[in-house]
Length: 302
Image (cartoon, rainbow, N blue to C red; front, side, top):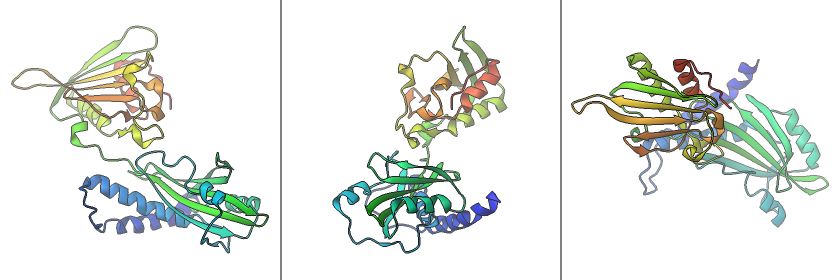
């Protein structure tokens, strides 16, 4: 039943996504094609989520709001959580008490969504949030409805479609090809480090792809993540990627991961050819794989 309920959202999303492929007018700045495509995809999806999120019958366009209402509904609570967050909104007015609108929204969950939360924001307005299923390069898809009472039987309603897109990482941030050896080191909270030298091509490629598939941590609510080199967490996973060639064995990249920091903090640091790259969010995958290779139980906080 859940799959059937999600189909209308998916169908609308795919139609909107296809429309996003139409070339946009140039703003004069050269944008990365991959970033531009994902941003356009997120914007099209945000419009779909906004349309899927219903409002009570009779909700009409608001030509103007009181100063207090306009300030409270000027943006969704916590926005923007990331430079890669896209928000598409509309505001309307409904002739119902705020509590009645809140109850109506809770009883009319959009197709393909789950009711995430209801409550009052720091701005004083009531908020209802719906979560939609993540989709490939769009790891966060949600709609948020903010309510502001204008009178005993009048409520201003703001509906936001909010989508986070994961920016494509350029080649300069990725572990390069030509890796012939990986040295895996796991230092548990208690005890000495355990080191394994990996030379099997299949395992090497799996580790390389594992790191290259991670997203930057700034798609979360902690832009830039945590500088793990400055932390005191004991548990640490380190991967050193080496290549061969005429000059002999050379260090290509270093990956340091702190599973204890948790996936939401940005817990993986990468250096490629000696240059420090943006912190990554690995969802525990690097620590888990390193633990299997070394036989050390790695605790992953998520």
